[in-house]
Length: 440
Image 1 (cartoon, one colour):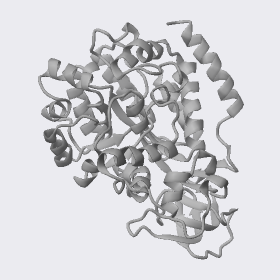
Image 2 (cartoon, rainbow, N blue to C red):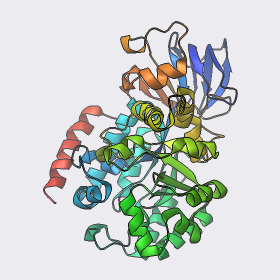
Image 3 (cartoon, helix red, strand yellow):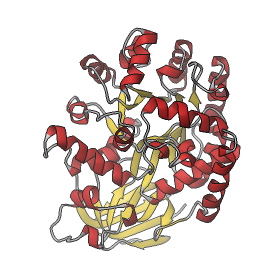
């Protein structure tokens, strides 16, 4: 892979000391080799980063690549109607090619806006096609097929036999977990308690323990969902997950908008991780998760855009801004400052994924996952003695992303993606959604 030297950037390291300084960074193969004010070596490639901001790559902890094709097809609905009327029928119509191009469409957007790592949840079928797209794009990812073996309103093509769902998940894990030198990892993804039998959830618990991989699911996103769980299982979401032994440090819960005091304490004591999706939660009118309280309890919280049809974009800049602003209405202007939010988007996400020793900050020995921002524009000036965290979180946009490096490879340079053919993906995405719409 060789060496890459970035010269003269403003490095926002996100390390424990929160060092910010102007200097150089040397990449050797897929790791950060050296960071210093001046590095004088011969490198295979030198990038002039003078006047630009160098950050660890953004880490999104809840994404649905399989839904990117559905952007604009499920607007202005609450969660359960959104699922039953639009998303489940569309997911049921997917084929191998449409899953591939849905993933490629989302991956192009994610990489182009500075995201280098995602925790993703696919649909029931054709997940191998999504993994092929992830492998080709160069993204760092933890993903898995969604699991659904329960629910009268689940479309027949998505309603699984329990044993088949489990076996297909294990088969995908054995094929893809660790692919690309560990760049791709597998997670078991039961959709949520509403669509999963207890038998499946208990087996997922045991398989997670056996293979030492994450469990990624939705929980307490919507009041109606919580009522369904209470009616069927006799207790609230997180209480139930703890009751069956799934509440462990390997569990990542998307949303957690409506938590009781008991549930917050279960999450804290068990080391469960949380992913905050402000854009999705607002658009589906699900509510506002009490993130300041979770952070005060030392709970690891990351940020995710969720899926394109409940957010309409996968842009971490928008999610960071929303993460900060929505909490200021109920809690006051001083909460969720820019530094806190940028940490959630980098090291916070790494902690959620159990990868804080590998990614999330610019430090020697960590994986070379980083992005270079060009903040030389009207909307990010003045720059004189301006707080860099404020510029990134409150002023910057995806248009500022100049270069993205993942695992030591340049995947975006001069704002042009290197690993995905934009024209083909856009054209085939339109063909795919047209084909799917004829099936529903």
